[in-house]
Amino acid sequence: MTRPGFAAGRAAYRLAGSLVRRVADWALPPRCPGCGEPVEADHRFCAGCWGQLRFLDDMGCASCGLPIVPEAGREARCATCFASPPVHAGIHAAVAYGPIARELPIRLKHGGRIGVAETMAGPMARRMPEGAELLVPVPLHRWRLWRRGFNQAVLIGASLSRRTGVPMLRDGLVRVRATPLLRGLSPRQRRAAMASAFRVPDPARVAGRRVVLVDDVYTTGATTGACVRALLAAGAASVAILCWARVVEGADD
Ligand SMILES: [Zn+2]
Ligand SMILES: [Zn+2]
Image 1 (cartoon, helix red, strand yellow):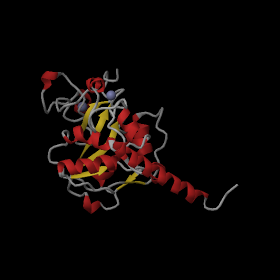
Image 2 (cartoon, rainbow, N blue to C red):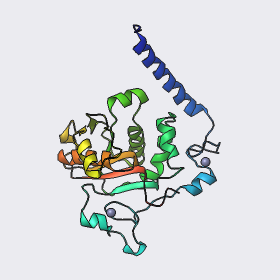
Image 3 (cartoon, rainbow, N blue to C red):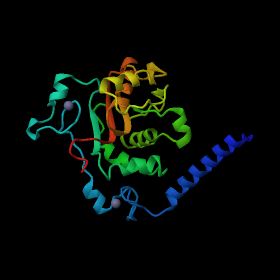
Image 4 (tube, protein in one colour):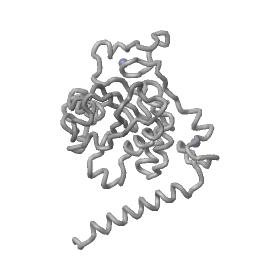
């Protein structure tokens, strides 16, 4: 039961839907990005959600950013990073992943509330690594991009670029394969599955630059790890990771 024009019609319907959502995003009264309750201004959290967000600072491990003993100071590394230094130049997250932090990427990606990208970029801009020269968003596979209509990392990156003046190379990375199912795989198996999933189409534009990879949420690091390796292989001087939220042991309460 194939009908000519059905796919085109569906694409147009999706496009119209996303446009309506975008207009609605502007027309609706401001809502808390954590719980959806009305608030007084855009990009503000209600007091309840604000109190539940755990903002992160630079006092964690100098390599992976995870909290370590407070008196360890700046430049100190956790035992894991000390034993095997990571290939990236640091993970900088605005908040610890948790019930409220999780809502923002969900509203952005699945609710189409693209204004949430601005909300996330605010605290992320304050975590921009020193000496950053180029922002590269984690790319989506083209099928997912087609279904969603936008790449959340590009929206966040564009806002970060406006706020900090660090230029964004939108197509610095492309995804050549859809993400395989990683559940149940060991870290080594994940790395193998993700290797060659990303490609740098124009290495000359990243070569010698201090790159900041932009993503919404950092979980296992399998995706970002593959991106970091691809950028370093293309000649990037260093690659740090900047994200809205990351999983921090004991913070998801
Ligand atoms: Zn709220
Ligand atoms: Zn560490």
